[in-house]
Length: 153
Ligand code: RP5
Figure 1 (cartoon, rainbow, N blue to C red):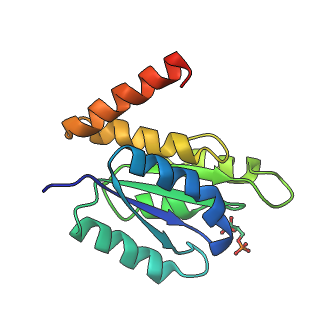
Figure 2 (tube, rainbow, N blue to C red):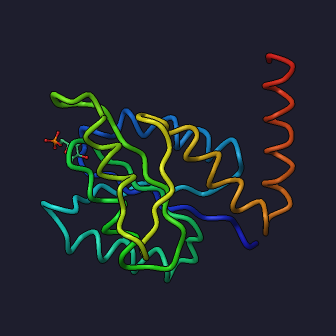
């Protein structure tokens, strides 16, 4: 069966606990989310390989999370036409504002959709909203999720 797929790429093993809510929400939405650790600065060739493999595997949205000087989402977006959602992570002296500005301030031509600092859950929901345009089951799960927010459950 044609399953919706997302690549979650993050800059360091130290980011993984902050990325977990994203994995959880993707699962709730019935989306396959593969997590890869690769740094735009320390392992750029691994980033390139992960993006290429994602395209080959039929991934339709990429979520890229990083802290500090967070170039990862922008670098990923420079290598693909897939929509990229950037998640700024806190850590370091500037508490995530550094990562937020790094992700949001993309030059014209290479967009990255940004969520809040540590907004991993919203990144997954935004990915689900994109995939819901094609996958009816994801749209149904999103409806159910919004209803659960309204009813407070
Ligand atoms: C960024 O630098 C990573 O995304 C991480 O948030 C931050 C610190 O990385 P480590 O020094 O903990 O590996 O590239």
